[in-house]
Amino acid sequence: MLLQTALTAGLLLATCLCGEAAAQSIYTCVDAKGRKITADRPIAECMDRTQQELTRSGRLRREVGPSLTAQERAAQEEKEQLAAEQRAREVEDKRRDRALLLRYPARPVHDQERVTALAQIDEVIKAASKRTVELAEQRKAINNEFEFYVKDPAKAPPELKRRLEENDSSAAIQKKFIADQEQEKKRVNQRFDEELVKLKQLWTLVGTAPASPASGAVGKAGPARAAAKN
Image (cartoon, rainbow, N blue to C red; front, side, top):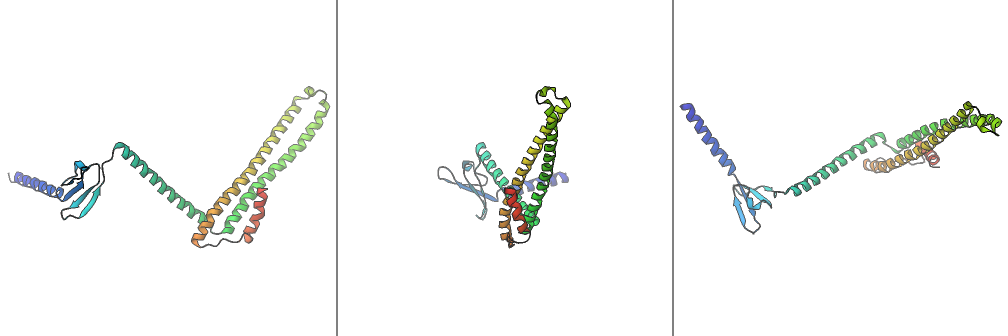
């Protein structure tokens, strides 16, 4: 009996406390008809407008925004998503800027890497050009053999025809490969040019004065860039 009485008293006390907590806020607004309404809970007549939640002493606790329609919520969510994506892009841009500065703390470092990258492509082109010369020599030998069948090429041996076709195919492949590498040099130069524009801004921000293009590794980079663009 005593236990039941204690439980009942506890429930009554909890109910009173909840009631007091709920009554600690006052909601006020002006409805569509211009009437000022005050209540102890959110006001249904002002769901389409901002309501103020006040403490018992009249201090503003917060403002409760209007309830949104499904279309309005979708528009707001889209706006928030776009804002979040923009913030993410800004964070990523800052991360890339830091990485760029760490990799290229000064102009000569950037210029020297450009020179190295272009030199590597030039080596590949040189090897392909050497192979092209070899194929041209092979073609001369094949043409000499074909002189015996000038009057009737159909009588040429299948092996000779196959060698001619393979030579033509290989020469075409080498020609395309060299053209692709020349395009790659242009892409490399474009990338380094774009990086340099950004780096100049970053070097200015951190107080790093870029070296003159006439000094150090920069002097070596100049001719390489000119050759790559010709």
